[in-house]
Image 1 (cartoon, rainbow, N blue to C red):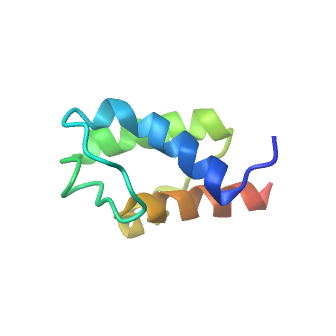
Image 2: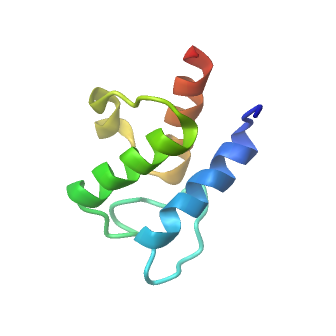
Length: 83
């Protein structure tokens, strides 16, 4: 599959659904910690789901810079472009 920013965002939003129990609207600006109340364990679970879905590895060193949905999409796109 050819991944684009839109298709990656759509997939990431789907993977985020289990972490969104309040059902808030997910936008590129959604703050994963503040808006979704994700803790470090949930964040690592999400990263594993994303790695499996996109067949990529996300270095843990990139995670401190991931705050929003857009940041997450950008990291996925960057990792996909390395393959």
